Image 1 (cartoon, rainbow, N blue to C red):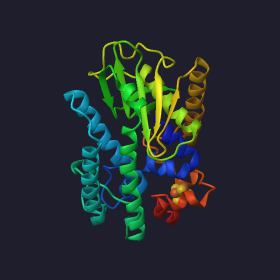
Image 2 (cartoon, rainbow, N blue to C red):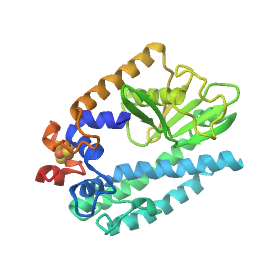
Image 3 (spheres, rainbow, N blue to C red):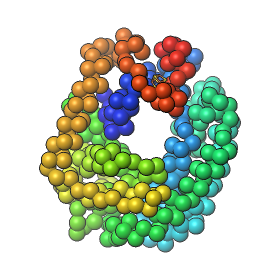
Image 4 (cartoon, protein in one colour):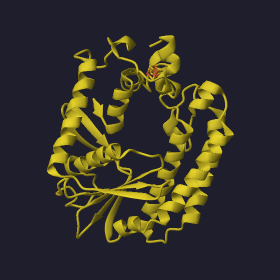
Length: 313
Ligand code: SF4
């Protein structure tokens, strides 16, 4: 079973939402089945999630191009690329292809489906305007933060948005840092940029898991040879709050590492206990095996409310 900071958070927020996402939804399920319906609902995004994805996408491409070809990074060009992506994906989102027969999102270059289209049949213009303004501001702010550029100086390998996995407490722990900077002279630096506000504790937890993953995961083929000889306490962690132009730096202590391991163990135990020792595909489980959130606002922003409220899964 897969564990990540966001999956553990989702489980704590609403066990049933986690159940729909992790247990019920299946891409390969037959058309019209509840598993396929739940899989499709799991593809829905809020406008604010989409805004963050666009920033991730254009920054990742820009940094990799900069590193590979040593070209100057031009924020205006990145903003231009972001606007093009914004317009192309918005056009796709307006068509709302979610219920197209045989839909395979990975075959689409710009596939996006919005929760508001599924449930309200419209996309609020004020949210779109705010999303674009924040994308532009996030990109401009990043290029005014000298400390981020300094962290990348001397990089001999730059790795962006790559999945890192290791085993802990019976779980496959997954992490995907925005950027890992490897240099010959110093330990790796992990940079994570955020468009939305994160609490210090939450960001520390996420970056800390990234550091654990970097030191324990099987390295990808293009990682430097000595990439994973560093301890998690060696790795420098930078959280970049793009809208606030704020940079937080973390470095783990041995006590922090133990706290992080304990967090994985505790939350993993809760997830595994909720599932129990049932058949491999958990077919015996029913929604009522999983408690629901106590907060109505969580339901308001939940992609699964149709099946949850109608009791179809
Ligand atoms: S609709 Fe509410 S209770 Fe149901 S899965 Fe979503 S968040 Fe949980």
